[in-house]
Length: 316
Image (cartoon, rainbow, N blue to C red; front, side):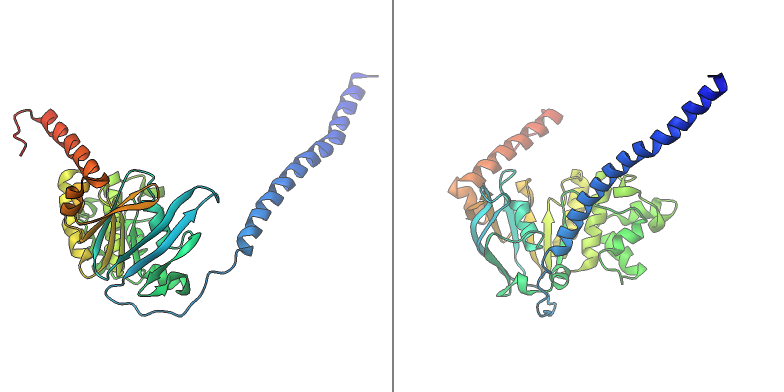
């Protein structure tokens, strides 16, 4: 066999084997597509959420939890037989160790999950009777981990209220003490912030999230450690804005820094999915239970931090 014939044979052999090799790759891709399609159809098969009668929007709404329980895996309960009532316009704080179920309670209110048992009521109406769109229009939610979308600052703020005018956006940004920073940028409110707001600091992202909640102007306000990424000076400015926002609104605040919830109308203390204590700051301190223990631990940590910065400071 000549060299030319050998090369021709080898080349033709590769052309013959290549389709069979490609078929194996195609079968693998088909299997992955079928698995993805199965997950998509599972989503399509989920029963449609209840589209109840639309409810009018008012200045405040009461919230009532009746024997609420939730289990993610069918065995361990993240929330267990929780019952409490939050009057319209009240400011209530949820405190407790990490994993106590505080954020899970927020997810139940927003209907990200359905309770395993029990009911949540808004003004004596179970929330599953609200159209989901109407229910979430009643709620402003500021999460601990702020999510911003790729786009401009103006576009991210408008997610709170798509019909908001530019003057409304500026007003909300001023209330959240973020306007001066935005105005200092070359493109102002038209500045691109990148995916998840990667071009902004944690505190700046959180203040934009707070401005978005202010712009939405919903009657129920959920704050999940809304000032956790802020320095002390900025936190005071934001707290002032939040105090104005809380007026005439039903507000639930998750807080780990207990000094920020002293003036709440009521404090609910959670532990392992249970409501273990309830009362005002001074009532709970006198009970000398879990809240008192957490407060004294935190006060001690804050005192040590202050003394490390300036040993000559007199602690009162």
